[in-house]
Image 1: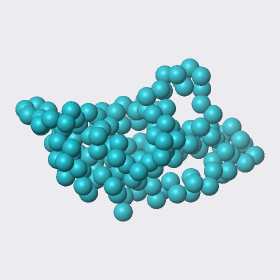
Image 2 (image 1 turned 60 degrees about the horizontal axis):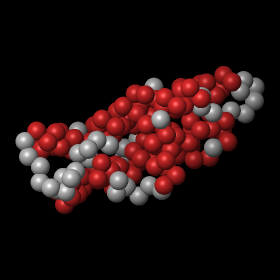
Image 3 (image 1 turned 90 degrees about the horizontal axis):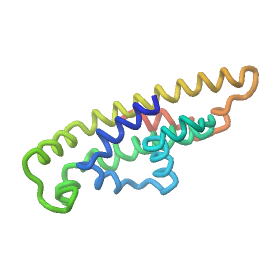
Length: 156
């Protein structure tokens, strides 16, 4: 599931056509680091293993990304990219123009898919957490911001 989130994020939301706009989001450096660890370094963590609290931190980081992207990018994405002109700062033509238009046109749908993937991943981690902490307080109950997860993931 982690690989599916990373693949979707890289291919559809943080691709070369959208990356400059995505990097304008008002997310702090620790949040970007957590997103990178989840989407780019899954092989390392697959070998080393994740702790539940680390998974929850990464889930929250992706949820914050979805929340901010919906509010800051989605309404203005086309204009923002037009100002930036292209990934290299030059005008683009041909296939690149078509691919950029596809990325822009599908941005909202791809954000919704990411939100669904993050939500499913969260529920899977909660199930594992409850199973591991049978009769004791699960890790998710100690992370207050997880109560905001629905607000972050559900579009207004």
